[in-house]
Length: 249
Image 1: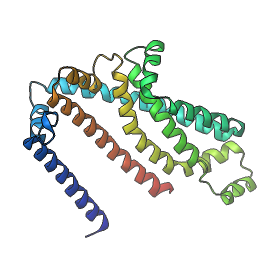
Image 2: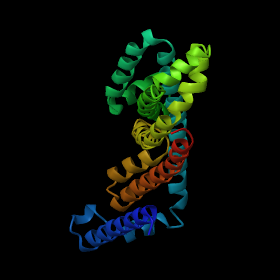
Image 3: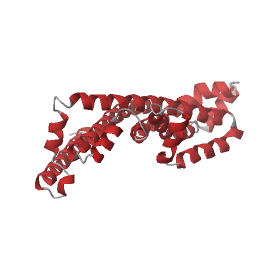
Image 4: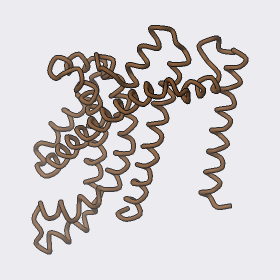
């Protein structure tokens, strides 16, 4: 058995064990009524009558997440590239990114709600989560080009911009792909938190409503939807990361 197949088998066994443990705890009520059986959660998720509710919530959250992911990625790439091309800006950009990352999302929500709109707040909060990860991964990736390669480009007469496009940016793609993979779950979390500040629909709203009405099974359904969406896109971005390392690593 190859290492990849062995790892896949161990992963599948771990997931199966976790799901069986979840069902056992729920059936025996070892954690009280706050931990329903997995079968009850899946039954509600597949209920025809509730399917439109879950679909609307999932689609709304994924749209907000994608929008915030795009905003944060664009801002992170732009600032990292600018700081790399203009060295005097590097220290200030690092501090700016660190300050933005240190502000809790729960504090940014009301600010975005005032500055933007309630429908744009989830994407804005999500973008802040993505921005720092992309900025750090891109900034570190741009340093991966070796001094020997930089010297070679200098000897060949390449200016700073040509060296950036033809050497440093391709060298940074594996690190950037890793950052993009890690940024997706953060973007989803940011979007869900942003929905708590008045969005009209989404998984975050579903979670709040379930908590307020003490609908425990519905709450777990919303959590399972969020986990599933996170894992699917995380897996797709993992494939992108592997391709980047195979080509440029």
